[in-house]
Image (cartoon, rainbow, N blue to C red; front, top):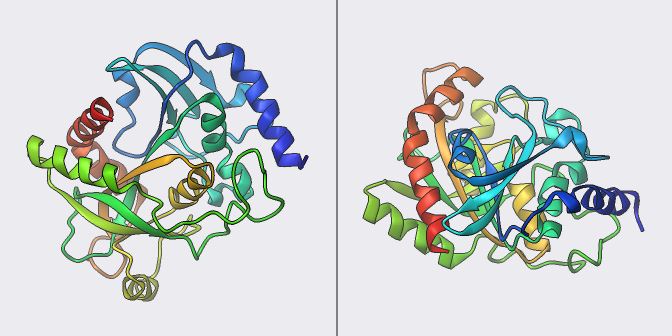
Length: 273
């Protein structure tokens, strides 16, 4: 058993007794959904810092805790605060929270994030349903000895984001009057924002949005045969596409402006799956 596998199962052993009912849906709360956990009933909170060997969020606005609860009679586990590769953690630590949620029982993963828009038809505040991703600029979390109990050595990534979930998100958006776009998400390491030349390259590769998380999480989830839905909140246009200087405060401000629509979309999605 590898060191990471031991840490993963030790972490599960430490939280197992705190799980009242196994969650079926895992949710990563990106910027714009920070208050989503307020919607959950009968909540149990598990702090990352209380889980042995577990990575702890160091970024402003990322609390660092699991929140388990119920919504529409469905058991949810939400990550309030994710960890990022740029925080200095090895990539297998970055996806450890996703793997632990699978061990807890989750079969569906909903990943959300704030992202920079590359597609020129997007504007700050656009919600983008992720239909594919590019992970070539970050290490794969599957490198190293395969954890056979989680998944196969060579997982197929033809359809990371569930096609039925993509259609459902569009159906809900039409019914609720919430405009969404489809797009390809590209993950970089961060923490720096990209240069204009890099954004041109990413656009040429087919990316519609860029960010510093999510794709590696989705890859780990797909390895474990989870069904995945992804939504990005376009909080700013990427470097070279706007006269506005990129900064984290702008990201948080735009995410807060769109949070009500974002929350409505995700709540209705959970209700119907």
